[in-house]
Length: 104
Image 1: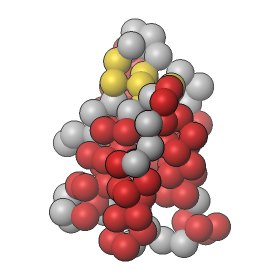
Image 2 (image 1 turned 135 degrees about the vertical axis):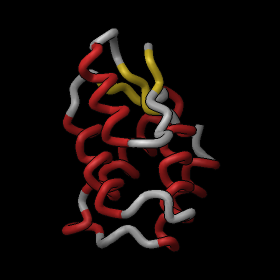
Image 3 (image 1 turned 90 degrees about the vertical axis):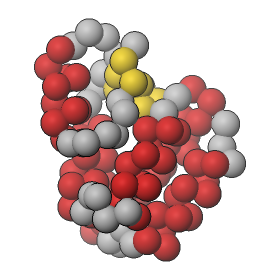
């Protein structure tokens, strides 16, 4: 199983791994923490992070870290649905990071 790292180009990494189809792709708490920290560091904008989260939710070959699957799924939903949950802000991002820290 390959783990999504959330380094460099989020969408490019996801596309490359999905094209290779070497098996399921794991999204871990660390994957999500990396992406959220990159948003806080202004390395990612909210639009790209929202699209990335929506694609992860849509792909059927993505699996979540078993001990934290619920919290990962919930946070991805919040990020991918700004029309329902509001735009991602630094404050929300820090709240999501706290949830990830204490899950699992």
